Every structure is written in structure tokens, then in C-alpha cells.
Image 1 (cartoon, rainbow, N blue to C red):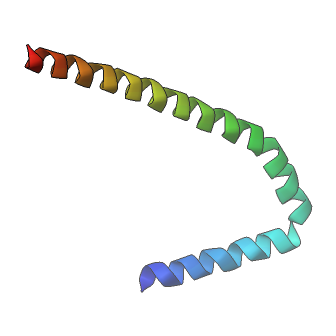
Image 2: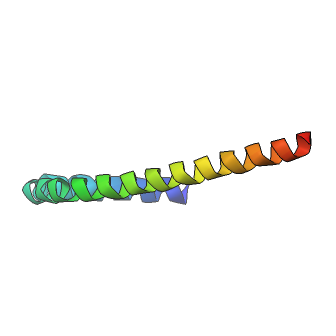
Length: 67
């Protein structure tokens, strides 16, 4: 129940902020979007590399078991 109330308070605060400082919010979003895209892209790249390494290790283990 506390989390629900806290979420509603934060939503109201966000709505208040966007209503009164809408121009500054848009400037912040325009500046932050490329940075966020860069960080998300790097994270996806690292996760993809780790996945490839895990698949290669699993395939190697399966080949060793078959022998």
C-alpha cells in the first residue's frame, strides 16, 4: 500500500513539473536521449558478447561430453 501511495505522489510531482517547467523538460529530454541511447546500446553490446561467449562454452562442454 505504501508503494502505491508513493507511486501516486511521484506521478503527481512529475505531472506538476512537466506542467510548470515543460520547456526545460523538453530540453533535458532532447539532451539526454542521445546519451541514454548510447548507454543502452553499449549495454546491449556487452550482453550480446557475453551471450556469444556462453553459447561457445556450452557447445564446447557438449562436445567434451560426447567424447
